[in-house]
Amino acid sequence: MKQMEKEEQLFRKRICELAALSYERDIPVHTNFLTLNEQAVFQSISTTLPPVKYELAGGSAMSERKVLCFLPSYEEEPGQLPFSCVEIRPSNPRFSESLTHRDFLGAIMNLGIERDIIGDILSNSQGAYVFVMNPMVSYLTEQLTTVRKTPVSLSVREDPAAFPQPEFERLEGTLSSVRLDAVTALCGRMSRGKAADLIEGEKASLNGQPCMSVSRQMKEGEVLSLRGIGKFRLESIGAPTKKGRIPVVILKYR
Image (cartoon, rainbow, N blue to C red):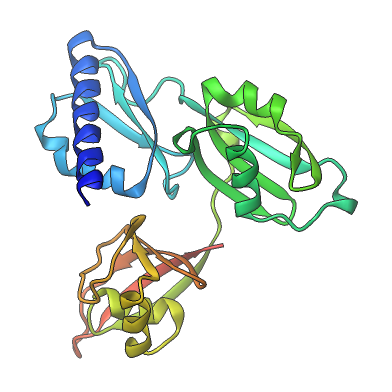
């Protein structure tokens, strides 16, 4: 716990330094990719920072990992994003293994690339799209030749308009509350009792951090990961019905 608190303090200090640098010199500066928890920490201190414009960018509005870009006064949005999208495809699809998100991430990490250099990885049956900080793009495209035992070829997409978008399965329902156990029950199509057991069994993470509080009230935009079940985003919370039920829309990551 103390280590986590120390890391958060260092992160807060770093964000303050970057905001001050951008404001004082009126120049663009940015972080590497931030986790959901780091983004939440930034949002919690954003009102205490110098009055500098910023944007969180990750490839799409629905990206999980995002880069925090502080902007100079003369820019309303980043002039050029500090990351690109690398497409990874099997060199010979006919003889390709069935590759997963974990396979692509593992192959990249085995090259010695730090996790915060890599943003979201969108994988499908044809391959994957990986968001990568620009200084590491050339190294990745030159060094990544296989994923597991499958030879792969890489190409770069630099135009944000050509970036792929994440795919979701839409879930809708009504809940008695937006407590973590109630949302988990809907996501996992299980009873609230089983949902509580899953949460208390340390199999649930909220915004990338373990959460064992069944009564934790969820908010729009938060991401819930359930081990062995999947990852979900609480997209919207509607007004209570006459019977006191709360309509929600949940997006399940594919």
